[in-house]
Length: 426
Image 1 (cartoon, rainbow, N blue to C red):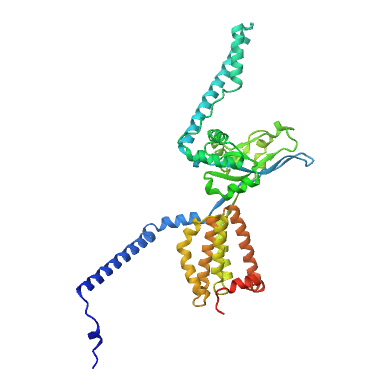
Image 2: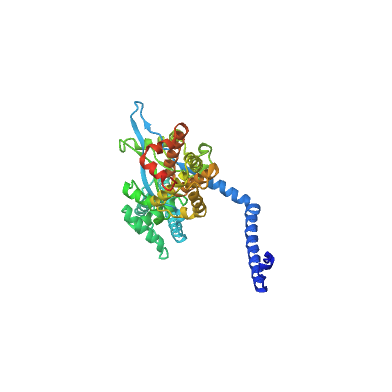
């Protein structure tokens, strides 16, 4: 009679039992750590993460409205608006040493302006005394009058402090930027100090009307130029040059005190308003309203639905996701988004292999998750202009998919049909 199963099973020795107990305890500890971590994230800090997710879900892009044209009664344009690419420095990205130099320069300019105002006040007092006395001024009084006149016309110039020796990163940044926009590092530093001294919380314009090559170079290499903003601003253009310039007036950025005034209610900080002349009198009509686009939400929603429209054949949505990720990474040279999504993309690629081989199926839930990751990848990689382009393309695909078959189009195009069939069982 053959031995029973219990008799054939080898006996568990004490060392083996100890090893099993240690491994079981270690596994229990790991499970406890994961469980309590999930409990901490979901229960204790769940509301915080929900609020952060809501904030990151919506990206508001402020688009400055172009000011209206000024025309005469016959419709001829006297003042119009043109688009100018500009390069700016963001003061909040500058080190404290540079900001301290700007503060010192502002204080020195304030002292020289106070001296000019005192000279103007003394000049008015001297002229008033001479007029009241009704006598001819003496030689010393005439000398004093000329001195006060010169001092009251213009404040004494203030030397801009040099870049601190400790700001080596800023000096290197100015050199790289200067080579691109053809401005010396010293001129960049002087403009930065003057701009921060004038408006500490606004971007400092370094150069206006940047050529297209330099503009695109800076936009494509943002990681090499931290703290540099490349934007397009609306500037005033005067077809008739200086004709009636005193009537049209000038523009300037709104001040904090004006933001509290009733006439500027609803105006955002940083908006340019009319400072004088017609620009000021009709500012509410010429200024217009800034626009805001909820880009991130639209891109995420449309990308999710597009993935669902594509998932009519095995592996098609995964292929689109992989091609999109490769295109975004290679075109923008941004690997941070890929690294951030890697923990989620890896399971998708594994499951996508089985979906492609027709051994599993994503379904609507899986395709929606792939589309959401694709939309998130675009949001993390593309700037505002790129997201607008993606929004238009996704919207066109969704509209087309509602009335026509995307699969039929893929079958009619040989290249798409071959790409769609790669890896699928015959």
